[in-house]
Image (cartoon, rainbow, N blue to C red; front, side, top):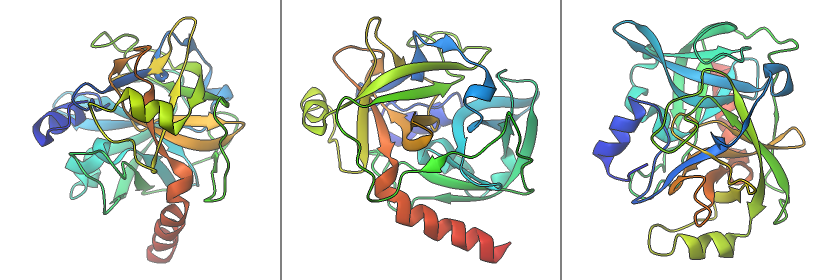
Length: 268
C-alpha cells in the first residue's frame, strides 16, 4: 500500500491493497486471522478479476449494491477506467478463482477526487454489462446513508480473498473476520506520522488474535448488520496491532453513489 503512483499501479496489477508509507492490508477486512466463510453468509461479496495472458487473475474485492452496480476502491480500478473490458466481476462463489458467475464490466466511475498521494475518496462504482442474477449466493447489501451513525466499538465483518499474512500467499477460499470500529481520534494518532485520516475514512481493528484485511482484499466490504459502512482501502502492514485498517467511509459518499447509480440507469 505505498502511496507513490508507481507502487499503486504495481499493486493494482498484482493484488490490491495500498499501503501508505507503511500502510497495509487487513484481516478479514483484509483477511488475516479470519475464518473460511460460505458465500451464502456474505452474498454481497464480489471479486474483481483482470485479464492476463493466461486468462483472468484476482485483483481486488468488491461489493454488490444493485443488480448492475458494484462498489470497490478507486485504487483498484484507476488503471482500467479507459479499458473497463479488462475487468470482470465474479459473484456467487466462495472460491477465489472458480465457481459462481462472472460479468463483464462496461463502465467504471472512479471518484473524481481520488488522490493517489493521500488515498482520499478511494471509491469507485462499476457497472456490469448484464443484470446479475440474484439468489441465495448473490444479493445486494444496503448502503449506509449520509445520516448513518457508526458508534466507536461497533462490531463489523470484513471479508475477502486476499493474503492471510503480510506479503504472504492469497487464500483460495473466501475468508471473513470480525473487527470493531475505532474512534477517528485514536486512528488519527496511530497514523500521525504516516498519513491524514480524513472524514471520508473509517478505521477498524480486530483482536485476540489481531485481525485485518490484507493485499487482495482492497475494495471489499466492511459490513454492520447487512449495511455497508466501509470499503477496504489501506493500512500499515496487515493485522498490525498498532495500526488499524483504514476503510473508505461509505456514508460520506452516499450522495455520490446515488448520483452515479442514476447516471448508470439513464445511460443504460
